[in-house]
Length: 261
Length: 289
Image (cartoon, rainbow over all chains, first blue to last red; front, side):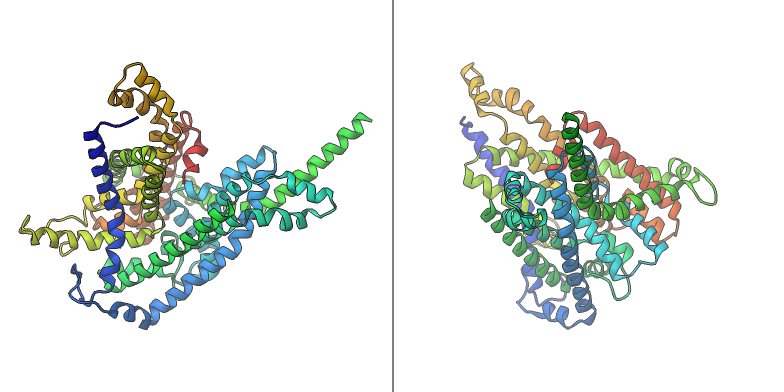
């Protein structure tokens, strides 16, 4: 049904403004990061790579980057198989308890992150995991699991379980039939889930603020502390790199997903 | 004979259940150890300190700073939810009536900020809104203002940045609901003499209400627990509940008080979810994420 013209124009104008509100703040960081000025000025007086050099040349930032990448990679390696196994069980089993388990696995998305963070801090303080790599990775596995479960469960929904039955009736073991028949068909959703877990670990801040410390502080914790004190343009450079990394990963995930569908 | 068949099938069923449980249990264990146990511990700590005590809760309800913080958090969350609805509804509507190409463009632009770190976006808003920030510089250059406006380190900055982060959580459930509204209904309305505006108010809007409820719940609940944004953009004056929790832990070493505040926040969130689930299935609210 056609909208009257004045309404149409009003709607288009409003939507353009809202979309600008969403996008502009993200795009503004890149030019700031290439500025030569010590203080924020827009447009930048002249272009330079000064803040990128500052970032790469600073051992503290580099150590934090190593921690972030290590945590993110380990999170994916641990959370993906756990999430795939759980999603498989949830979608194949008709047992009612599985519904409860499904909801439980999504809890990290529902419980306010500050409560999870403080709770984990209390538990870690008791068992001596504060400021440790193990503790940081475990917390991020927990936060990344729901993304893997949601993605893979969605992938399994469009997979016909009878195919696996056929493979098994032809003499394949259950494990083998999963790897040969099922996994190749849900590959895209597994990769997407893993990528989302990676991004989640890379961006995670609140839990890290409470439980990380010493040499095992991720980038986000250092950025947060730096932002509280002063607005250092080095953070613009790091932010630009992080955003570029996220967008590239999402792009990979979405093209994969399209190919898989 | 019939009994043996049933026994075998029952046995098979049991084995199947056992296998599925075994597959789900590593993930389940992680969640139990890192969500359920910590939250349980938090709850325990809020009422037990060398014996049972309700002192921590008494304090929340009697001391002014706690009351004000809870009230402020609810106010900000409500404001953000209303603004998100106001900005998000037209956007979701446009995406649902636009051609396929345009609706993909709109949705892509909505989802894009989703994958930018919350911290990065807080930084962007600081760069935009501070006294020497982009917005103030621009307004001074065009001569609209003489003195820079105080746009950040206050409640205004917190609301703007929170809205920016949560707007996609409003648009996506709205779009999902609107997309499923059968267009024949609007045509039927038109054939009975309803003009486009009338048809929108009487047919489209009521049918989109489940989406409004789902998106509104998500935005409201998420902003109740916001921490990074108010901490960085509130300038220490906008103390939201989450900051109360962290301050009690980090500055005052009051774990019991922090726990009690956390429990009250969690109960509020749970109550909202339970109330809403009577109108919209809960997995539909969460599924949008």
